[in-house]
Image (cartoon, rainbow, N blue to C red):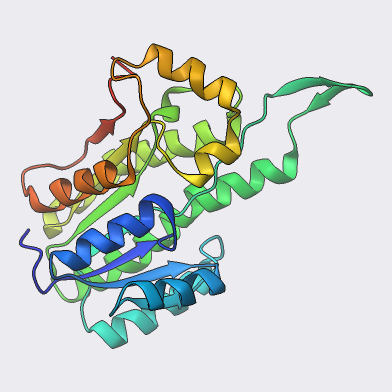
Length: 249
C-alpha cells in the first residue's frame, strides 16, 4: 500500500509505541485519527503533532467505539488503515502468597485486561472493516500483539489476551482477503516504554535481557518501523511479525 494520502486510525496513540506509530504514519503523508481514553493525553498530542485528529473513546465499550468510528468516517470519508495498539500491561501470577495466605489473581483486573487488550480489537476491527467494505476499500488492519502471547509466567490475563489477538489476526486474514483487506500482527518484545518499566522490576528486566541475543530493550521507533513495513508490503497477511531482539529464537 502506498501511504501518501491514506487515512488511518491508531488506538492508544497518546504515548509509547502508539505515539511513535502516529508520528511515522504522518511523516509518510497519512492522515491520522487517534482513539484514546486519555483526554489530557490527546490534548498534549494535538499540541505536539500538528494535524493529528483526536477522538476520546473508551475502547472497551462497543457503543463508544461504534459512535467514534462513525464520526471519524464522516470526517475522513474513507478509512484505509487501522492500527489496534491500545492495551494495558498487568503482571500477576495465578496464585501468590501474602500475609493472609494464598492470594488468587484479581478477577477485576482479569476482566479489565481482556476488555482493553482483546475486546477492543474486536470492536474496532468489526466497526472499521464494515466501513472499508462499504466503500470497497482495500485496507489493512495491524494488530499490536506481544511475544507474551506464547505464555509469559506472571501475566495470565495479558498473555491470554495477546494469544487471542494472534488468533484473530489469522482468522480475519482468511475471512477478509476476498474483500482485499489484509490483517497483520506485530509482536514487540520488551521495549523502552513507561508501561514496561511500570509492569516489571529492574531485576526482572535484567534477567530477561540476559536471555536476548541483542541484550537490550527495543525502541518504539523500531516497532513503528515494523508497522510501516507491514502496511506497505501487499503480500504480507495473516502472520504475526515478532520484533524482539531475538528473545524468542
